[in-house]
Amino acid sequence: MAIAQDSADDANGAYSGGAVVVPGAASDGGDLLRLYYTGNVKEPGEHDFAYEGRGANEILVESEDGMTMGPKRTLLRNADYPEWCSCHVRDPKIWVEEGAYHMLLGARTMDDCGKMLVYRSDDGRVVARGRRREQGPLRVHVRMPRPHRPRRARVRLALPPRRGR
Image 1 (cartoon, rainbow, N blue to C red):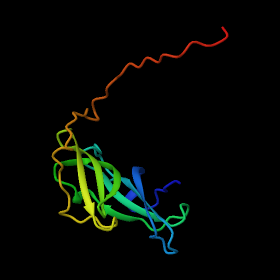
Image 2: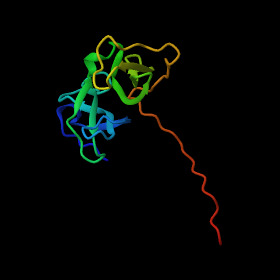
Image 3: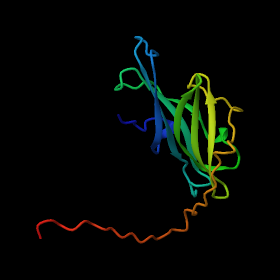
């Protein structure tokens, strides 16, 4: 199944995400597939796209048959994230626990650390402002290189010896 970048909220790419199956939620009483992903939008003009000029939109699309997708629904945009987030918030991971949907997002801070955002929704379709919380035990600090400082890495590939020679 492929997601086409065909809306204003994913015009420059559809980044990875997650999915959940909702038993009995399809119109015919069958299962409903919910796909959550990050839509990428690059604004016109001179931007670094790490700290400005990029829209990171969390999008939901549903399918009743696993082939045909319904309309896209944007759940979160940059304005919904904490002010310490850069333009890199993405890759929703979804799970259902005790009747509520939970979304975990990776986020790059303005001072180049990695953090996780956790959201909760009762129906999996609406993620309300004010529902976000920063998880103490899940908070991760990872120093990330700035995009204008390329890093070179040496990679050595060890291949097994060829047979028969």
